[in-house]
Length: 309
Image (cartoon, rainbow, N blue to C red):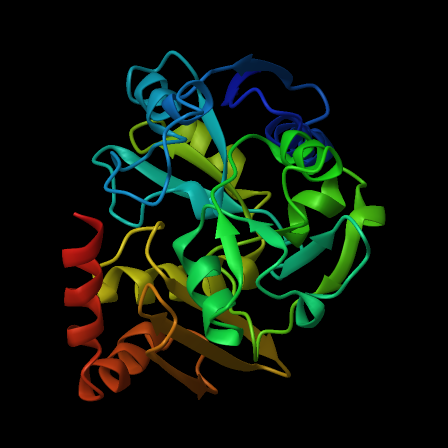
């Protein structure tokens, strides 16, 4: 059996936390496994002045790591699942999803104000089109500006006064133990998260059967099922991870649920539905996407395509 594994990851505190989490899980099952971590800077880490809400190369935060995986220069890649393009990469596959963290978005405020207390005189930082659209859906007068950088950098910018508030992923804040900055957790009824949000993905080279077998031992089945549905729904809408598309799936008492939302960039138009099934293996993404296309989601998606090109 293989006794050495090299894991590729981004260099941020959050990426390294997630990679060490994968390492810990593997060590539980394979205590004698020698695990090395290779830090990799991606285009998204280097081009910090480029806005993310335009037509960027797919895999903006993962491509360099995936290239190493394809070339067998690393054995495993660890990603935030929401950063992975929904299109399959030939020769690569997701062999495990760790038990999912908090999938919600959170609102952070320098003055501890809640989102409902914000108006046109306060500035909210986010680069996500999904978050921008949902913010504007809640209040069309909100002032929103792009913010780049890792979790620590964004929070520092808020503290320094560049922004009055931020919308970020709960899982990242919690993993770095920065909960003291959270003003509120945003409810799914008002603010749908990104497909795969809160999940850590472990990617392998499809030809490396031994590594796939090792990694599969840390897979959390329910998390894999739910996030696969979410990503399949996004793929069916034809949008990438920068589009204003949200989805969330969960399993409650052996019943699986999938809800989704597609919004116009200004938040004025939106379509949302939820489906459920007692069959955990049912293709809920197909069932949900049919409801969207029956309700003319194509017109919203076409407008988005025209506006961001």
